[in-house]
Image (cartoon, rainbow, N blue to C red; front, side, top):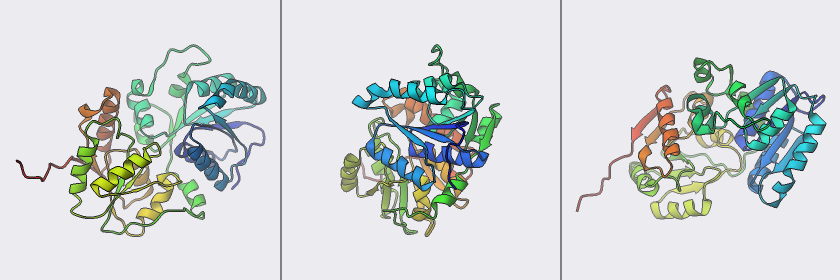
Length: 336
C-alpha cells in the first residue's frame, strides 16, 4: 500500500523510528493518506527512518534536521512549510511536541489532532503530565494545549479511556504485516536456553547500573545473555561493559518491535529488562510472550524525575498479567 499526499488533508509529524511506525499504522487504521514531516538529530537514525518509510510505501516526506548548524535554517523551512500547507491540513498525527512542532501545529490549525505513542512519555502524559513537560503555559503559537486535547492512537488505550481521553487501540498489526515481507538484516534468532535483555537508556542516569546489571547476569545461571541496545545507548561503552561482565551486545537497524519476531519467535528465549515500554508493545503483539522486569531502586537515579517515571512504569506493569516484576537479585558472593 502506498501512502502519499493527494490533497494535503493529513500531516504526520515524528522524530523516532517507533513514532514513524506508529504514524504509518495510524494512517492505515484510519484509512487516510498523509504527508510526513520527520525531525532528526542523528544521521544514523534519520537513515533508519528513511528506510522504514520507503519500505512502507511513504513517498512524500520532508526531513528537517534539528541539530548542528543546519538547525539555524529550521525557522525558514518551517515557515515555508506552513505557507504551503496552511488552510489545507484537516488532521495532524504527531508523536513529538517540541517547540518547533507546537509552532507548526498551531499555525496550521487542524480540525483533528491525534497523538501516537512515544514509549514512557505516553504513560507520563496520561498519568503524570508534569514529567512530560505538561501542562505548559507558553503563549500561542508555542502552546502545547493541543497535546492534552488530542485523541490518542495507542497501546495504552485502556488506560487512556479510563482517564477520560478519547483513544483508539494500536497494535502495529498493519505495518508488521507490510514489513514482514522485507528482510531484517543482522537479526539472528536466540535459542530457547538464552536470555534476551531489552536495554534502557539509563547507564548514565542510574547510580548502580553496572552493579545491578552484574547481579541480574549472575541470576542467569550461566545461560548466554544478549543485551539489545537502546537507540541512544553508548554502543562502545556498552560493548566494553559486555566484555567485562560476559554478555553479548547487539544493535538493530530497525525498531525492536520489527526485529523481535525474528529474534524471539523461533525458540521463545526468556525476555528480561529493567523496564521499558517495549514490554507493552511486544506483549500486545505476541500472545505467548512473558517478560521479567527487574525493579531498580528508584531513589538511585541521579534525576528524581527519572526515578518517578520508573515508579510509574512499575506501577503500570501491575495491570499486565504477562509481566512479572522482581527485585534485583541479592549478591551470591560470600561475605568477607
